[in-house]
Image (cartoon, rainbow, N blue to C red; front, side):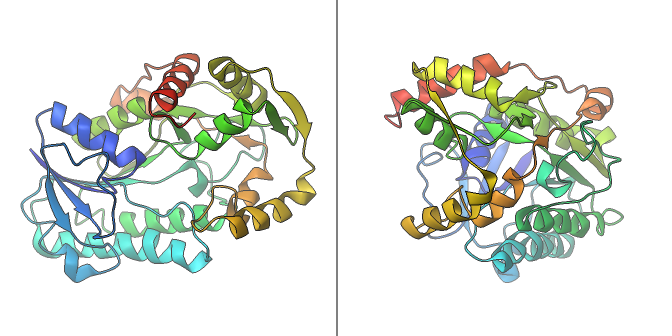
Length: 321
């Protein structure tokens, strides 16, 4: 089996490439010329230079592969239109290239997000039947990316995966929370509820979905099947980094100011930005992955208490903490 992985140099993509190689796949990685190869440079993969925003650069990349894992996506951007240029148009370009150059493609797997559906409005975990109501530009772009994928489902075997917050080694988003708690501060803006998924479980679920006939044409949430409060998460991280942080209440009304300051101080797009603030204003980011359990046999293996500690250890070893 040969796979093409987009976003292979990123957090999730690099873990996926490693697992595919372990399973005996031959792996080609679509990368941009400016990409940092740190996590994959020692791996036995084929590097193909291209950009999802340029359809012509994709035509050779999609040839002669059995599965396309479309992991690449923009999660942070200075301008809203950037989300749509990458997450929607980039996805359309890849699908059009696959249709034109790879009529025997066995599966096109699109990595979406819980953000495409949005937070729970009634306290119950959202599922695949919940009407999507994304609240951020990122979420809206991922939903439109899903729509683009499903337009091709009668021509290309497709599957869509929607994870919640994903964490683990190499992650730079939840890492910000680790650093703040390490400094002895627990930023608190009210009780919130989250679904989580350790990156190894996500990668395993992605591959299961790509290989399963039951997943063809389907949409699946994946999570570790638990719901955590922000207090639960902060407590486990604090224990892992060895601090007893002081709770500092942050009024939600000042979120936009914090996002503005964060964006002004950072040359790169920060996780604390105006688009993420839209999501932080909602307290219940929870999803139900029972469909994946029933149809794919997916069951998470890593408990949050374990995954958080493993991730903290990785941060320490690599001198991130």
